[in-house]
Structures are given as structure tokens and as C-alpha cells.
Amino acid sequence: MSFKKNMIAALLGAGLLGMGVGVSAASLRVANQGDALSMDPHSLNESLQLAVVENVYEPLVTRDRSYKITPALATDWKQTSPTVWRFNLRKGVQFHDGTPFTADDVIFSYERAKGDGSDMKTYVGQVKEIKKINDHAVDFVLNAPFPILPEMFTHWLIMSKKWSETNQATKPVDRRKGIENAASFRANGTGPYRLRERQPGVVTSFVRNGNYWGKVDGNVDQVTFTPIGNDSTRVAALLSGEIDIMEPVPVQDVERVKGNTKLKVMQGAELRVIFLGMDQKRDELLFSNVKGKNPFKDVRVRKAFYQAIDVEGIKKIVMRGASAPIALMLPSEVKGFAPDLAKRLPHDVEASKKLLADAGYPNGFEIRMNCPNDRYVNDAAICQAVAGNLAKVGVKVNLEAETKGTYFPKVLRRDTSFFMLGWTSSTVDAHNVLYAIMSSPGEAGRGQFNLGAYSNAKVDELTSKVASETDDKKRNEMIREAMKLHQDDVGHIPLHQQALNWGMKANIDVVQWPDNGMPWKFVMVK
Image 1 (tube, rainbow, N blue to C red):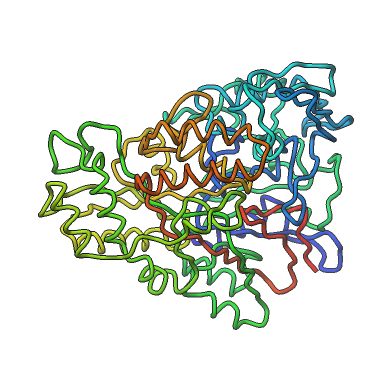
Image 2: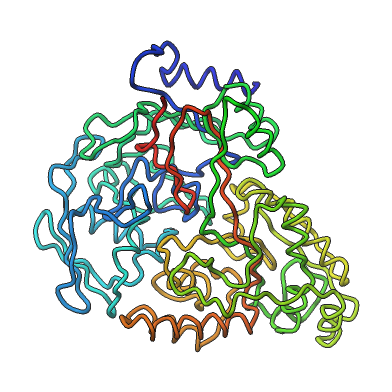
């Protein structure tokens, strides 16, 4: 079936055809290069996934138009002791099925988010337990003082205990093991939009929640979300008026879209850093011709890979200027960024060859690289460029670029030796990347996305201290020390910070969050 027929069928299913032009309520047709892989809010900690489901489910704490912390399902919060936070919950809130929202749902969602299969453990990892004070107040008891706790909750979404139990969805959908349940295809949140129809990989439609407790500043009543993987087809759909808004606009098409008077491009710096990860745990690499040893355990090999990669060339040729090469695992907008560490190692082919020879690989070696092809801007092209760079120093890269539907289960199981990933410090604080990416894999979500198992005991120690330190000067010094250790270890290879490119009709006003979130309640179609 053609894209156009798919879209017409979707519009009919969502009841969007036949809306009067003069009415204030509007429909919105959104397209993305990928799809949200599940409606389960605890199943995958991935930007597009969260951008979609956060219109249906809500956290205790959210962000306003300016990306500043603001109350959501909690009305206020305060520390009652160094390790206890009291959150007062909003009264009169109902889930989409009419069930009242209470403290029991918060406690249930905590247990679910920290349980097996959850991809959201890092957001609740600092919590030891939750104590119910009454139906609309809870105490979060922490393992240690953690002053940025509210910021951690902005992506931890609350589910209905009753609905989850009734629908046998008390445990998260597990992308690693291919385990599905009702929460993957159905949804029951408290948010401003309700799930209407779910056809994975084809179309998902949403309607406004008429019983929403909060204010909706926009005028969108119905949303149709369609994944269109092919860049040319996605751009053509925008140019022809078949869709209203799309992201990302391929960097090669930005000027073309800007040149259309009926369209506009919304651009901004994203908090995401694109980086490469390497397996540093196994004694022998998967998918490599090196037998009996793991080259990535040698820092000289990791440094050789780093210096072989021409990030300026990637910026110029692949990204067409829409990236900022970076030396750290977080951008300058994130609290704790250390400017004096912002200089990358130089691109130096001869230095790379020497490092490989010194490490015992004068002729390089062969390895497989895993890469998504429907998640980032020009993701597959970036990986192809990396493979080409490494070929110049004797490393043969067998590139496996695939849809994130198969990519994520594979890399999250750590069935990879060399991979590309992106990370957004959504708390806008360095602890986020220290805890989730740079710490040794452990309990309570520590190192949950450190897929190459990089490990430095001192980095782990500093991460724990950073979590509880309230003196900004001391805290920044510890963050800098941890970042420097990781940088010297070449624990990962940061490539660049991305730029956001959203294309849309000229009559649409939308809020573009730096984590690539698109809150539909702020969208105004004029």
C-alpha cells in the first residue's frame, strides 16, 4: 500500500476527514523516520519513544515551555530530611479509564520501573523505598542525599495500578527478550491525549483527553503519528501537504524546505551527544577475527580508534554543518560541563596506526559495528564514515545498520562489540550521564546504558559523591575529575552534539524541547 493510501486510511480511522476548516479545534499529522516501539512507558528509554508516550502518560514533575521544572502529578515537594523527600500529589486526577490517581499508583509505578525488564531504572535508582502518607502524599526515602531528585522524575511516568493488574501488565515490556504485554499496544495514562489506535510501524492515532486535569495551551484535538523511514518520501509528504510536521528534516533538505513559503524549519541545539561504544569486558570480542583476546581492553586501541575518526569531515560532508564536534559525553548546556576538557584529540591517521602497532595490531583487525538507521540524523551515514576512516588505519568494519526495532534489543543485551549510540542528559545535569553511561554496570540502574561495560572504580566513587554533594564548587570539581579520568581512559568516543531540524507548515506553532520532546498540548495550528 502506498504512503498516501496509508495516510488516508489512518485519517478515516481517526475521524479526521470532514473537520470544518473554520473550527478552532485542529488535527495534527506528525511523521518521523522511526516509530515508538511500544506504548509501555517503562519499556525503552529512547527519545522518540518518550516524546510520544509522554503525551499520554505523565510524571510527577514535568517541564514547561522553557524546559524548566514544573509540577505535574505532584503539586509540590520538599526535603523533610537529607534522605527523605515529601511529594504532595494532585487531587482530582483521573486515568483515561476514569480510575482516580492516588499514591498507590506512584508506589506501583516505582516498583514496576525498577523491576526486571524496565529500561527506566536509572530514573528511580536513588530511591530506597516509597512510604505512603495518605492517598495524596508520599515520602521518597533515599539511599543517600540526592538534591536533584525532582529533575530525575521528569521521564518516570506513572501508570494505573488497577489497569495494569487487570490487563496483566504489571511488568514492563522487555525489548531485550521480546516479551510483550497489553501495555505495548494499549495505554491508560493521565495525560492530555488518549491512545485511539495502534498499528506498530504503520500509524498510531491519538485524541484529546476531555477529562484532562490541566491546561492545554494548543488547539490540537487529534494527532496521527506515521513513521516514514525513507528521507525522500518523508520530505515529499511535507512538501505535498500530506503531513503537517516532521522530524528530522534530512540535513541535505533543510534549505529546500526553508525555500518553500508554505513551510518552515525549526532548528535548535539538542542535548544529545552521539558517541561510539566499545566492549571492554569480554575476554574475546564478538564478531572479530582477533581470537583469544579483546583489543578494546587496551587503551591504545581505543585511542587509535578515536584518532582515526575525522569528526570535522563528518560534520562537513555527512552532517553538512549541522553538528558540533565534542570531546565530552555531555554538551556545554549541561550543568557540570568542564570547558577546559572540551578539546578533542587530534585526527591523526599516522598516530592511530602507531598506537595499533604498539598494541600488537600492525595490520589492524576485523570487527562488526552495530548502528541504527532510523533514529538519528544521518545515523547510518555517520557509521559508514566511521568505517571508512577506520579502514585507513587497517581496521575492517563490517557495518550492520538496522532499524531500532532490532538494534535496541541486540545492544541492550550487550550482544555487540562496537556500536553507535546517542545520549541526552535530560536532567540537564552531569550526574545523568555519569550514572547511566560512565559508571560500572551495577544495581539500581547504575551503568544501565554503559553497554561496553567501561569500568573505573574512581569514576564510580566520584559519581556517588556527585549525587549527594550540595556545594556547587566541590561538585563541579568532582564532575571534572570523573570526566577527565573517562577521557584519559577513552571509555567512549564522543563524536558530536546534534542539531534539531523540524519541518512544518508555516501556520503551526510548536515548542521544541532540547531533548527532542514535542509536547502536543502546546501546538497551535492557526
